[in-house]
Length: 342
Image 1: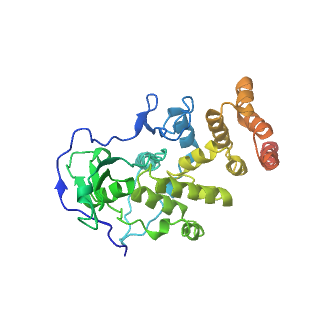
Image 2: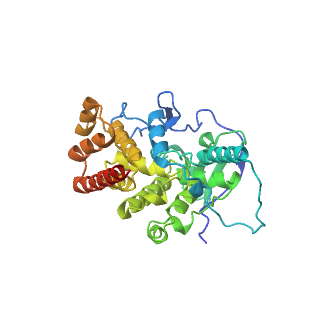
Image 3: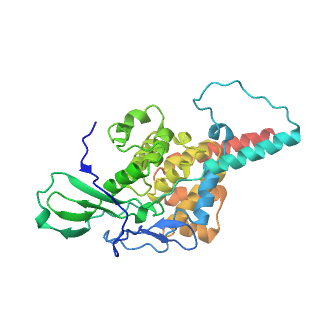
């Protein structure tokens, strides 16, 4: 059990003027909130680059995610109870299936993809007269129930007399103390350590890791982003795309790979599984994210689609063009065989 690093001496309900904590979010077009580029990152803002929440992007990602009811409603461990049987007419069965599809679509809503939040290092005061009075940090937290957590005023008095705003890690911890979220722990499970994740990945529990990560961390925290990226890298390395297919995490993985121009493995997998529509969506997403590429320009000039679109990408952008070509040839041969036999 790790040792406590600070004490809470009081519950502060006042909020000094000028110390409101502002969330670092900005609107992207008319869509939902997207992460704002850090002011201190030195990177030029990419005004034309679409956000994860853009309608076109979400439509493409949703199409590629798929809707496998058997996977969405897979059995989970729970208390043993006698099964319930219902006699239905064909019309009632169709209505039940439609209802299940709506519930499945709700479960497949993708978690947000945000940039990492900027660190907090604001010093509010340096009172030397308080130096040495205590050996522990003192945290003051505004626990007003109606205050959004992002705007909640939390400060730390250091043993040397400095008064500063709480870091993100300290903020998350104190918010969990006063406003506990079900399933979230004060200390993250050892499972999330970088050296422990590969052991879990060997058991193909990538989806479980991501589900737990969403509960434990905020979507713009460094830990959340690191765990997601490490999970995507393992899936890409071993070609285990099926693990996240038809889950709420598939879109985030595709977005990650497309941003880094590493879609060859996923593209080959889609072609081998005769999912040509998904392959077309994948390349279209690639072109939206990288409109400056030769592939995007040629596809736009030729208004290419289907196999022609894949061939353009294969010749101009693919890093594993030979494997893409072999997969495409196998698909075309199989299609020709089926067409001739029918």
